Image (cartoon, rainbow, N blue to C red; front, side, top):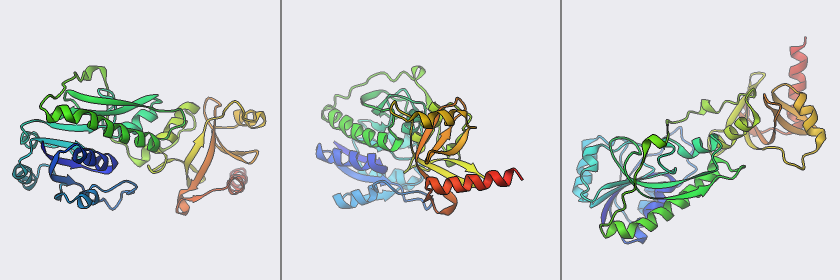
Length: 317
């Protein structure tokens, strides 16, 4: 099998390596340039292609005629897309006689669309995974070739789940390739009516509403925890990012839970512990708080206590 690969991010890196390990001839790799506003915490596919000696080009606009010409010149049997950020035009997909296939970070048909791992964590799911599917004009709508589930543990962040999904993507592709290369591609139904579709998320979507139940607040914190932009709250004109947190457990001191349940929703310091009190009286134990107005500097409980005390005195004048 000869392939053209559209790829980005860690999934792009690992799946590109998997293709080569299975003996696929990669004729061209198409990836993205780094964006200046992006936190590059992941592997660059351009670096992977250079390391592996593969021809690479940047393709920010998949509708660019030069990109279509490059794909046609590569004469692919199949096209693969691994976390490439843009929809590939049908005319380009049609250049591969054996089909075009995408690796999606969910168990389709659930969580079609953008940032599926973050959405799954936000909604408190206990499972997600990776799905290899055929590409069509409609996003994440083609038949399913194979998929691999992974668990989402109660305290997993989206970053931790994404690491599992990356491994699941590699496993899915490794398992599916021999049959695909033999021309025996599985075609399992992708029943869209039984699934869901979600669009992208913006940093502003990480704003914490402490009036919500603790479970929802905690899921938001987990869903956007670093390396993502983080869940944030504003107190006295200063923005604080809740970078790490936990829900209370059975061994939590009663002295902490009782005063917290009586406090107003928001950030507090109780018994030397930074606590977020939620609308249902539930508690979030903040393990790492960052001061976004001070270059994301960590905020000790003592410093927050002084700030909250001063703010309270000022408001009561």
